[in-house]
Image (cartoon, rainbow, N blue to C red):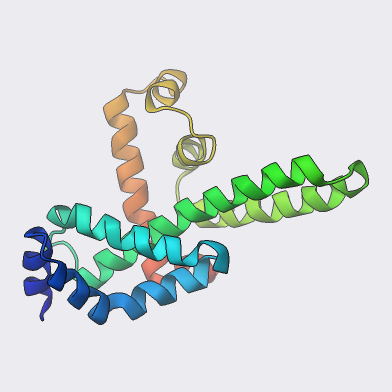
Length: 179
């Protein structure tokens, strides 16, 4: 099946088309997830990626991107979601179980994670980095951020959208690994 037939079939909720997509792009999805996610969440992330493709195929625009790149971007964002989930669980366990004598090690781990996030966001302007951090790391609402930064919600959504596009572009090109 070519990409156009895959998209058409998935839009029609044809499970055969989804199976064909897995046959054609499953290796790509698995390699992206395997690179970014630990074994604990790997299968769950792959399944969520496929579910997201299934539910959001109507948003795919072949004039803007190839199906392969679109799938790769969805997969990468799912990996970011799972990393965030994984880190939150780790931090919760660290805070509960680590004796006070090991707080230096937990601080180092937290610093390494913050460094990785900062590296990912480094290609964004300072104000956009702050918006991304507050929205996706601190989980603040759009209205909270917009009010605090004295900008409209629509302007905030636009900044997030442009920033995601830039991060996706940089991630697909591998720019964040070259720094």
